[in-house]
Image 1 (cartoon, one colour):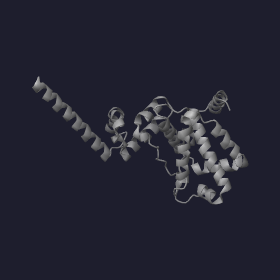
Image 2 (cartoon, rainbow, N blue to C red):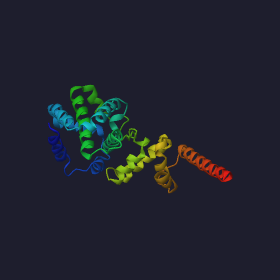
Image 3 (cartoon, rainbow, N blue to C red):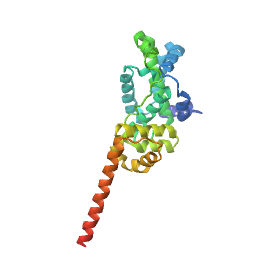
Image 4 (cartoon, one colour):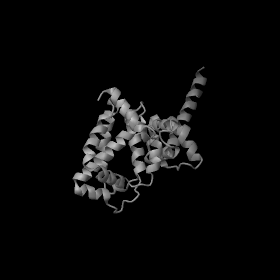
Length: 240
């Protein structure tokens, strides 16, 4: 497949489809059920479907997709994974791919192809491995599990904010990412300083986001920086 043919096929695949809307449509649906549906509907066609989607990945996306697929394979074996919300899986994959390609933004086509590839791979594995299929369809203690793994996107909140501004993710999804960064301490990453001050703290003050001990640490750190700046300015005035 030439690059021109690849781009035509990608455009056709994503025509009239919005990743943001698809995330909303999948919300509340169990990802394991989606994989099981793919297995039953496509069956022996799955290897061809996987091959087609692999062919549609661009060279810029390739490394990120390979790493993400391997990470998803590991997550699939975690207890209770298959009750995860399908919309959350798609949003998480969007975050992971954007993070892997930073500072370039992932195209909607790339995110959708990654989601379809991961899902088809799981469906093919379930078709061939009965024990894996039982994991996928198991309802034990895993219904409506929430996916809170946003990759490392919480370490670079500028990506998520930019994605929201470009309407690649919804405001609700952005708030979930910001809250995760508050909860896991990634707001303390130096590259997040500007976004925490400009976006996170105002939402915490309004009660839209919940505070945490990490917020308190961040505020103490910022206060110390302000104090050091004032002290430096005072020293300069004395020497003038």
